[in-house]
Image (tube, rainbow, N blue to C red; front, side, top):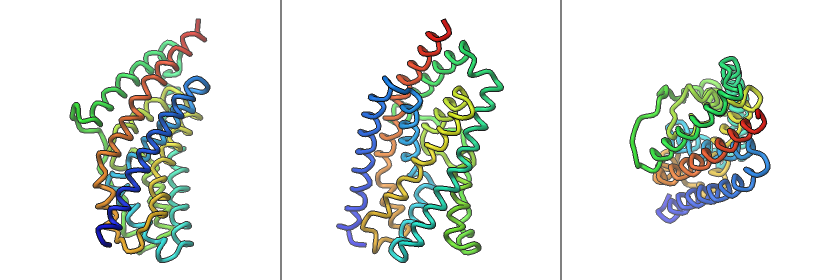
Length: 263
């Protein structure tokens, strides 16, 4: 892959990320006056996209996207399996987090107001981290999926298995802080909305893979594509930060909504 093609792929990913940031912030601005849960879902999509520079994010984009050159049908089948597999596990995990929050009474009016305040504070702290104003490690399990699955089960089945694994969210590398805000919100909002939040976060994680398949990567190897994605790391931090800076507004309004309805 010559330098001109590499620059085109890198720049298109960069532009797409900034377009998504602008569109998401605009959508959140419009939705806060209509439906706060939908506004949170838009932020969750942005958080998911930002994880493309994580170990599994770049690895899976680099492994599956070049399949389009060999067989468009195989590429669609593999990425669809990846998306569907992760969607199932992400929704289940989100519902479980919501159920735990429900048992802990996080949805109780008085407790939920405090939880929304906590969400706001955590979001601002994580946004500061994404903007390199402060530094601290994120709690996580440093685990990756098994590449050997592709040779054992075939690429399409392996993609579905990779999706199921990464969709569990807690069982993989987390590069940015938006995921933890999704966890806190799911715990307060309950099982149904928690499942929806996690599923939307996962949908955001799969978007870069679908987008990469539309780029001029005909002569791009997996390691090259991984390298090009990682060259845009600052951009993905901006995506996470944009979502995190919107969350305190959403959480504040959710808290006000609870307080007003309780009175």
